[in-house]
Image (cartoon, rainbow, N blue to C red):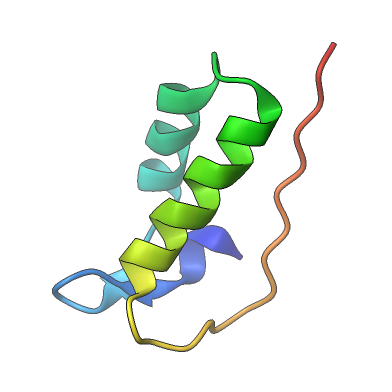
Length: 62
């Protein structure tokens, strides 16, 4: 999933804690902006590396 994607300068996984931190930073934004932020963050993280796993993130507005 999202946290298993390799990237960054050291080529390491994104990791669960970094994913949680990202979600906490964007939780106040509208869902469309959250989606854009998550896509941009992942693209910047992985750089030229290939996606290593399926990625599914579900957002719900109550």
